Length: 401
Ligand code: ADP
Image (cartoon, rainbow, N blue to C red; front, top):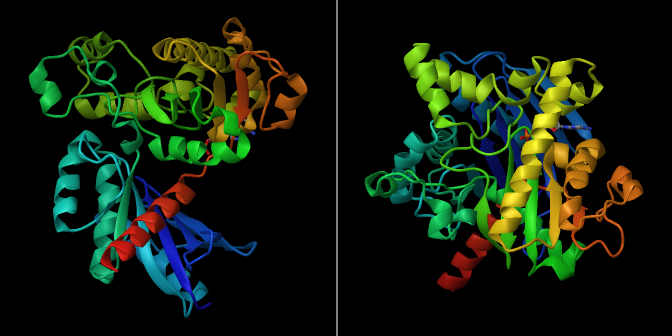
C-alpha cells in the first residue's frame, strides 16, 4: 500500500506489541494492522493480523538471551515490511512507562531525552529498560525516523503535593521517591472519548477504574488526574492478577529480616506470585476465578471487590464527591459480575445499577435518575499513543512552516 503509516510499539518484559495506524493527512488514525511477539526470552512467537487475516508463527530463539528484544523487533519489522510495501513510515510512537517528574506530555526522542529517560530505569526496572531498548533499536535501523515517547505517568503529573508525597524525608522526595501514578494513557483515552459517549461528564468528578491484569483507579476532576491508587511503582493500590497491591511496608521488613528473603525473592513474590493468583492459589484470571468453586477463588474476588470499593470511597472523598464511575480494561469491560459487585457496594454513594444494562455492557449501566452514574468504556492505549504521536508531528510541521 502507498501512503503514510505510523507504528506504535509497546515493549514489555517478555512481549513486544505493535500496531500500525493510517497517518495520511486528513485521516482519523485508523488501525491497519496489529500484532505481538510473545514469549521473548523463552519461546518467541509472532501473532499478527491485518484485514481480518491472522498470522501465527513460532520464531527461532534469539542467539543470546540479551538479544531477545532486538530479534523480536526485527521479526515484527520484517512482517510489517511485507504487509506495507510502498508505504512510508512517518514516525514511531512508544509506550514508555516512566517520564519521571519531568515529562507531563509526550516528547520527541533525541539524545538528551533518551539520556534523561535512562535515569528513570531505576524507578521502573521491569519496564523502562525494555521500552528504551525498542527506541534504541529503531534508532539504529532508521536514525532519521521521528520517534515519540508517550508516558504512563504523564497524565498524573499535576497531582497536588499532598497526593504526591509519601511521609518520608524530603531528600527521598527530591531524588524521585514520590507517588507518580500509572495507566495514564488509558485514562487519557477514556477522557478523549468521553465527549462522544457522555458529553455532560467531561467537566465532572469521575473515578475511572482501569481493571485489567494490572489494575488501578484514578480520580479525575475537570479532566485532570487529582489522585490515583498507584504510586511510586505499579505495585500499589488494588490487588492485581499477580501483583500484591497496597501492603504494609512492615511485611517487607518481615520477609527480609525474619525470613531472610533477598531483594529478588521479594520482587518475585510481590510482582508475580501475589494478587489474585496468590490469594486464590488457583489463577490470576478473573474468568477462572468466577468459574471455580475453590474457597480461595471466592476469597480472591471478595478481596478485589472489597479493595476497589474502599479505594472508590477514598477517591470520592478526595474530590468532595463523585458524579460518575467508569469501568475499563479487561475485567472492567468484560465482567458484568465484578461490575455488579463493585456497583452494589457503591450504593451508599447514590449509585443505582441497572442490571440489564450492566449485563449488556451498555455504555451507561445505571438507572435513569441515579445520583452517581456508572459507565463501561473500552480503553485503547495504542490509539492514544498514535493520536499523541500524530499531534506532536503535526505541531512540529506547523512550527517549522
Ligand atoms: P492487560 O492489557 O493488562 O494484559 P487486560 O486489560 O486485557 O490486561 O485484562 C486482562 C484480564 O481481564 C484477564 O486476566 C482477565 O482476568 C480479565 N478478563 C478478560 N476477559 C474477561 C471476561 N470475559 N470476564 C472476566 N474477566 C475477564
